[in-house]
Image (tube, rainbow, N blue to C red):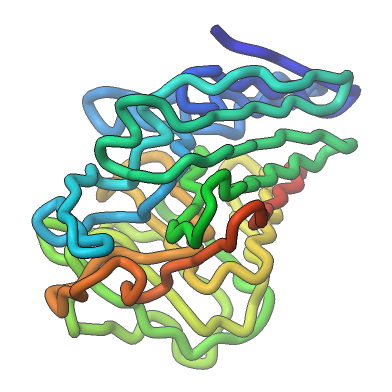
Length: 284
């Protein structure tokens, strides 16, 4: 099932399964800003990453002395969300734990994803609530893919001297880092930009970027806020790019004895909630 809302500037659609954003379309020109998925390239569009981001070493983790299996980017994208509320300018979806999620992630949770349009802006807010009696450990992130072309630019809010962390063929973090920006703010999307997979940044000065589609004269002003990690990814030579705010990160080969010690892990006490949002303004 898909739900849609629109205003004078934008029409957006969200698929209930996985709470996946499936369309962001200009009302004036009909231009589609969101990657529409292609199984020959990448069939995804905007998966929700929860309760892990990226890859767990050997697809496993330990919690309180017990080992659990966990698939890449977590469970949320593989289950339905309920349409929790709908108004003229906002869709709110909710997912809760179920019998299957508890086998891999032994926590009761509520995960809300709210899509709100205001003029030419879309804000997507993710809220995790701990429904357990004790502490809950988790990661959460976003993975939206936007149409673009080789030769387009990603312009950072501020000049950056930025190193990308690297992952191997199995999506496990390596010790290797590559210098991507040297007191610069423009990243040109070239044919080889993603030959070594995602660019994974931390410690950025910027809180936003502009995806500048030079050939089509379109821009997306993308704000990722205080996310501690910001990834940029596409398949090599693909006509899209993913802008990904992460609260969490892949495992490295320095495996921790318990997920509570994992780098970048978030935690909530009983009854507490955690929220983060990304915002995109679509400019023609």
